[in-house]
Image 1 (cartoon, one colour):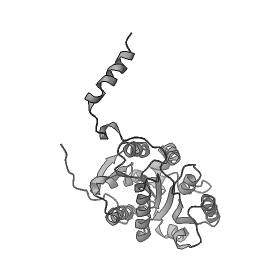
Image 2 (spheres, helix red, strand yellow):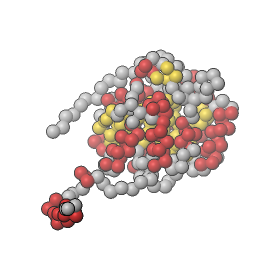
Image 3 (cartoon, one colour):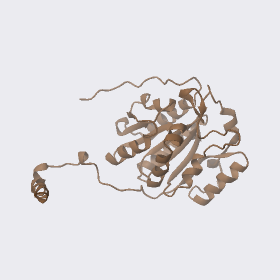
Image 4 (cartoon, helix red, strand yellow):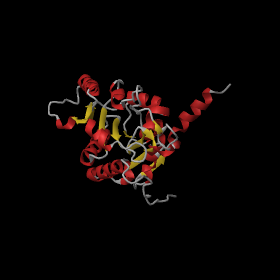
Length: 278
């Protein structure tokens, strides 16, 4: 028995950057003409974690900090689904930081979109791990991902740059649908209530997609460009790195998705049971 749910209205404040992310996801789904029943949106906690309520695909709200292992399980269990994980910077780089490192390393086949606003907006604006606060430098998630062996797609978008954000979302989904592995898209998504950084961040961004000399397949150059831009008080946007290699771990389809006739295996079953006899 199934039940169809009508997508909800977003709960976000007017002007929240997460509206831009939702628009990019919906636009990418339409552009690629993917049936919504072939997509599942896996959500973390916080304001961004409600996005899966708003789009008419399958959806699942994971535990705090656990959207990546949960999404990995879904991607392995049903490789036919396009899995899009979404979450915030606190969910990704505080309680979920260990999962982020090992997910990049394993390179499973799904998209991960992190809406970074540098605060915990749902709990009244405390600093997240990506916040620059005096002498404490925030985590640069794209450079962290670049440093991990196994990285295959790393990009950064800005929620105000809607056209490019949809293009990046399409590129991430195409990477996954081609079986090339984990696609990480960080989106600078300002919190207008507690940390309104629209003007500041827009002035700091250098769009690599506009640079014809930039080669996103050169890992060392991608890392060096990020370091150089940080020294100038700037940061890269666009496709920062991509590899056309395949997803990391190959496993057969889950048993529930195979056409299994128990009667055909009864002899093997009896042999296994007999081996435990004492």
